[in-house]
Image 1: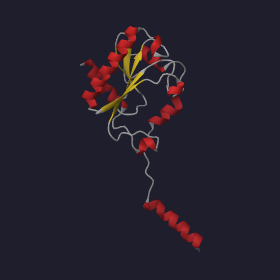
Image 2: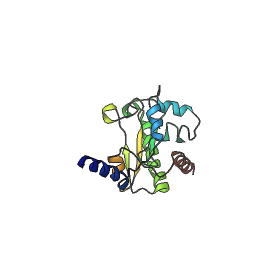
Image 3: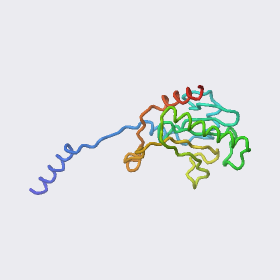
Image 4: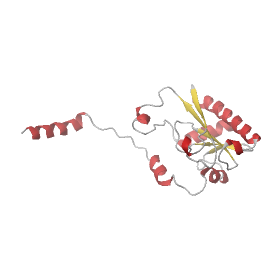
Length: 177
């Protein structure tokens, strides 16, 4: 008799505390297509700038591209056209331009999103967490208090308030101004 009662109680708990589901279909694209042949940055720079390659701005030696799998809306990267694994092997003019573009990214993002803070830097080498270790790049990530919440920390899921294509259009327009 006791076993039957516990089963009924467990059954009822399903309805008292229903599981919430958040769908993130873009993760399937990452899981299925994250292993591409060649360098994603070199392939992107060969394409015409659009929401497909996510290049928002090109300069002489480097360009600004949106991260396809961002930590927050407005997560940008500055990438040199030269395919090199670290900053030391880039010429001084390219390194200087990358820093200027990084600064400009922060200015654009402050105007568009008004973040109170940024994470900015590079993961150079696999041990440092580089996803693309053969082509150095800088990350510019706008941050807000509370943007790392239980969803990121426990659920390994990011909740972004804006479609990537909308972010691309906003950032691209801001660089053109």
